[in-house]
Amino acid sequence: PTAGSNLPSPVTVKVKADPDEVTIGTPFRFTMEITAPTGMQIVMAQPTERIGAFDIIDFGDEPAQHGTGMTTITRWYRLAGFETGHKEIESPPVSYRAPGATELIEVPKDHTVVTVKSLLPEKTDGADIRDIKAPEPLPIDWRPYYIAAAAVAALAIVAALLWRVSRRGRAARALPPIPPHKIAYAELEKLRGRHLIEQGAFKEYYSTLSDIVRTYVERRFEVRAPEMTTEEFLTSSARNGRLQSGHRGVLGNFLTESDLVKFARHVPSIADSERAYDAAKRFVDETREPEFDGNGTVAAAAAAPRAPVTAPPPPTAGPSGDERWRGPDATR
Image (cartoon, rainbow, N blue to C red):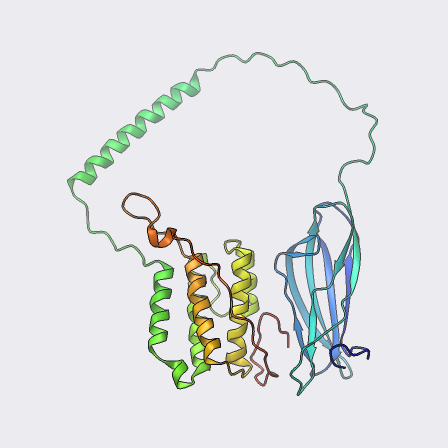
């Protein structure tokens, strides 16, 4: 079937919640099963923070089940809700692409309902409510003051000794580490100087550009993930909590486009390549560590307002011919 066709979809999505009635803040398991003909390419959107009214605590994939001409893919989530009532959960978007086709077709969504109850009793007769007792006067304990005075005196002595040691001579100190954004800037300039776009080496260009951004994120936000796929890398960034959700979206679009070029045999235009370069540089600009001048204030280059980061629109990808491609929205 094509988009807008009334024919039944060859791919189905089924969701369920276990249990479907929980108290507020109690985690439960939300499972999504996608059944498709074997060989069909499935593209699954991956929310990293919330599904409907529920926060995502964890998620993962179970091994694919293969039957007679059909394959079942299972993705599970651990969710928790903090609003009482009957809450509907809708399956995240799923699309498919038939072998030899170029168009992605969205699969009809499935939904279920989870009831979140309060931990407080619904009714109370007030029998357990009693007035508080009057406060009793506290005796004055001078010991904390003595301890505080002794601590201040000890700190003053230590500070004086350190000052005298520093005045007598300072040993040679190691140079401070180079900030991650300066390393990224240097690598970006080096990449531009190689003129790979002019040579038509788009795959090498996008691979190097993606490695520069991934290495910057690893150093800047302490995400130790050199061998992760794009989906695992974005998931690790989300769980780390240091990268803002807006920047995670930009990073996801950028890395997805890079994966299409590296693994899905997509050939971008020169304009696409320039936009990808600009998006990478502006991503570094928006997330770089602030720099301070000699007066302890943010340096002008870091304090100046910047335009919001925008990622280049994801290109229309052809069918993948490389089994290694595992982008953030693709499941083999």
